[in-house]
Length: 255
Image (cartoon, rainbow, N blue to C red; front, side, top):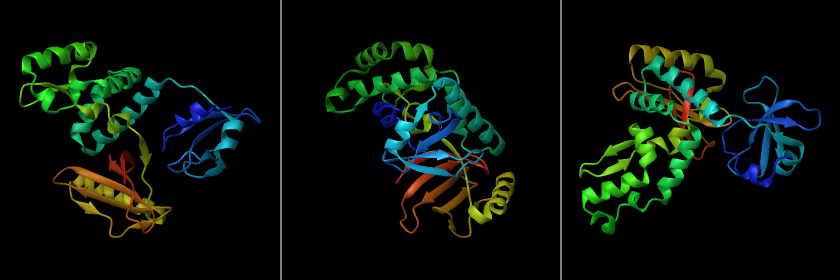
C-alpha cells in the first residue's frame, strides 16, 4: 500500500515505478492533475495513455518501488545535457546541469532546506547593515561544507557579499523532462523545429495545436532559447517548458 505520507510527497508531472498488488506487475504511476485526488496508471508501452483511478484506490492497490534518487536525477540531467549539446540551446542551463552531475540529490535537498532556514539569505535593512567582511564570515560558516564541495553554486554579488545561485536548488535543478507532443502535426512540426534549430532560424508554430491542451512552441534564434507551452483549452493558463531540442522539454513553471 502507499501511505498518506508517501502519496502527499509525490510530485506532479513525475512518473514513479510501483508494484500492482493484485498480480505483482511492475507499472508506472503518477498523480493525475495538480491535486492529489486521483492517480494514473500508464498502460504498458504507452507514454501518455492509461487509467485514471481515485487516490484511495491507488493507495490501496499499489506500493511504490524505491529508486536511487541520485541515479534517477543524474539520468534526467544526462538526457537534458545530451539534448542541449545537440541543439545548442540554453548554454547556461547546460553548464549548470554539467556541474550538478557532481552533486548528490540528498545534498541538493539538504542545501535547499538550509537556504530557507538561513536568515543571511533574506536581504533586508538589518542584514544590509552587517559589514561585508562579517557577513561573508557568517555566511561561510553556515554553508562551509557546500562551499568546499560545490563551489560552483556560490557567487559574489556586486557589493562583495557571497550568495547562493538559487537556480541550483529551485525548480530548474530538479530537471523534470517530458516529450513534446503536437497531436496530428507531431512529425511535421518536429521536423520543422529540427530544421530551424540546425539553421539557427527563428521559428514559431503557425497556430496553437489542440491536443488535450492548447500547445504552442516558439524558437528565438537571436536569444538562443525555445519555449513549449501546454495551456488549458481556451484559458490562457497552463504548464510551460523550456524546449531543449525538437523532442525534449524541461518543466519551468505553472501559470
